[in-house]
Length: 129
Length: 131
Image 1: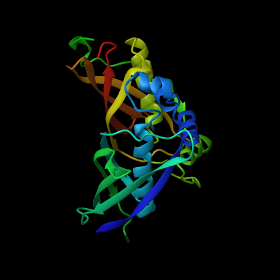
Image 2 (image 1 turned 90 degrees about the vertical axis):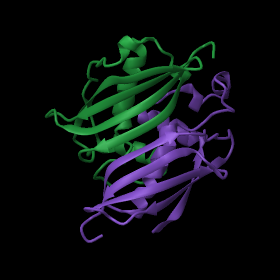
Image 3 (image 1 turned 45 degrees about the horizontal axis):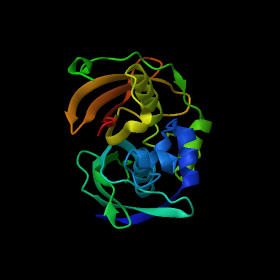
Image 4 (image 1 turned 30 degrees about the horizontal axis):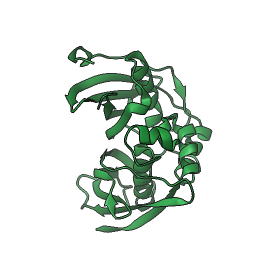
C-alpha cells in the first residue's frame, strides 16, 4: 500500500533549534566555512534531522502506532541554503502486517535525489488498525 | 585509532531526565507538534549523542570531522516523559578506508531500573586530516 507522500521544508533556523534540542552542535550544520573545510558544499542538515522527518511521516501515517525499529544509511547530504529552505519529501510503501507488525519501506528525497539509504520502519499498529 | 578499541565499553552517561519540555523542543525543531505521550522515535539520539560526544572526547576526535554514515534503532518500548535514561556506548567495529576511520558503535539506553529501552547502532565516518 502506497502512503501519501509528505513534504517538509528545512531551514537554517530549524537546524539551530534541532542542535539545541538534540545536543548535536556539530558546526557543519551551522557554519558554511566549516562545512566546506571538510568537503561539503555548504551547511547540511543533521542526518538525524532528515531521519526525524522520516519518523514524522511514519507517525502521520500510523497515528499512535508504536515504532519497533527504525534505520537508514545517510547517503547524500541535504544542503540547506542560508535564506529560505529546502524541501525534503518522504514517501512510503507499507507491506501487509505480519504478526501485528507493519514494515514500511521509505523513500526520502531532496531535489529528486535519494538522501537516505534503505530507510525502513517497523511499527506495531493499534489492534483495530 | 587501532583495533584495540573494538569491544571497548565506555562509562554510562550521566542520568538524563526526560521532560515534556525537552520532548516538545525536539519535536518542534522538526516541525512536528507534541501534546504529551511517547517521544518521537528518533528522540533517543539525544542520549546516544551524549555517549558519542564522551567517546569522541576520550579518543580526542573532532566532532566536525565526523560524518554520520548510518543509524539504527531497536525499541523495547517508547521513551516517555518521566524516564531517567543513561546510554552506554561500546565500539563494535573499526576499519580504515581511504584515510577515513569507519567506526561502528552501539549504545544501549536503559531506564532508572536498568531495563533496556532502546538499542541503537551508529556508523561514524571519521575523516582523517590528510584525506
